Image 1 (cartoon, rainbow, N blue to C red):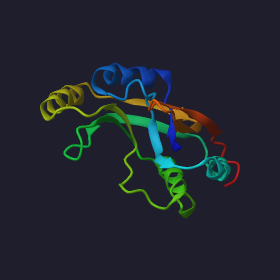
Image 2: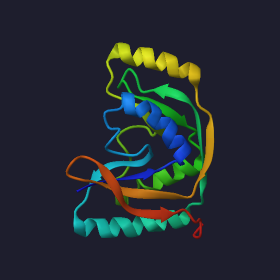
Image 3: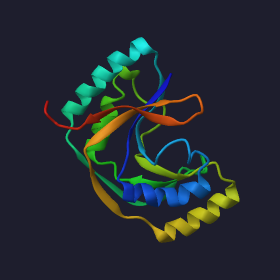
Image 4: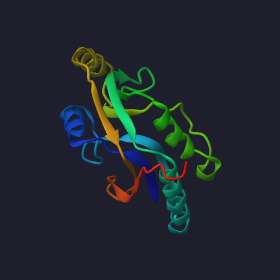
Length: 172
């Protein structure tokens, strides 16, 4: 089964992201707006129990953090994806690194760019047009995140919460 680890922002930021996603993101109906901490990975039922235990320990080591979106950006020319850029503060980076220890398969394939996707899989011309518009609109939102979630993918391709972990910082 496929799993992933994410943070869900507040309803206010989700609503803003969805105002773009419903038009420009074919995954709009498959997953709520989120910031990925660990990309999708495969695990079976016996493996997931140990993974959940380890993720719970990670949550105990980290305190709540500030999620600050600062602007609209793009992954072009690699992909025609637009996103709300999230400031890569030390807390976010530390959680991401903990979720990519040797226990979890080691470092990720790509450099980590904290973000919330708002548009993807657009044509080059549509991407250029929408990016030009959204760059001018901008975004500046800040909130405190006190939990993250492990999701699993259903047969229809949608994602749902498997478990939730509170960031407590109890074990520093």
